[in-house]
Image 1 (tube, rainbow, N blue to C red):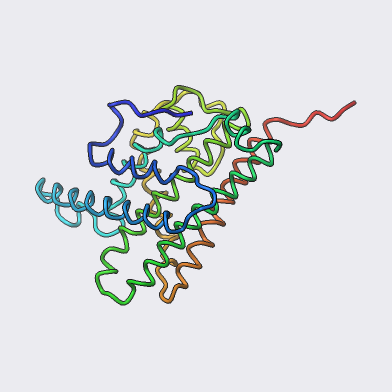
Image 2 (image 1 turned 180 degrees about the horizontal axis):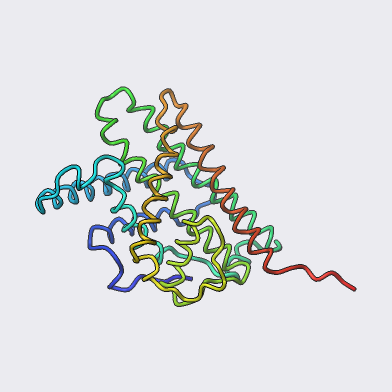
Length: 273
């Protein structure tokens, strides 16, 4: 699977540090520990907030006003896209042989179903965590200021889990993206953005495909839409926690089911004559 990113990976030291936190949340754990997911989300939120403040200071120093630098959730878009582009090639991906060792006696379709279910539980835990955090802090005015950062951290955490799911489904069905580790990581990231399996005709587009202006803009828009979807998680009285878990789990399962169905369809069953 994708290995460590080269030294020339996108983003500076700030996004590399954030990327390492994002990669950490993608590592699966069964059973999913909600307390650990809350800790991971808290650490990512704090780091993202620090990076966002640094970017805002840099923008002001360069003479970019609030309108030019962006505000609130929209202003986080470039940072999120850079961070996820940096993280994607670093996410550890198990190959088909390793996945079969982890799931002895199961068919590939059964393993795929297990991967999808586990990813759904992980993203559901992140959704519940952000909802519970909002419920605790809802009455405090500062919560409205940090909410965009919390939602951005959750969007990155969910993205990491889902990109890993997409990658491992491709590996499982023998449809690995073309190219070296970093190139495959980039292909799986864009597969996640498109919510479809990698086009086998695409070839080794490479890391430049993610760093190109159009692809980066597409990634940024998709992440901001994900944050918008998460607004229901900020409802008070723990309603947000319930909504957050359900919304994330349902979306992750839909993604996994779509990608798995496409990959299965590339290997038609030959009926005995």
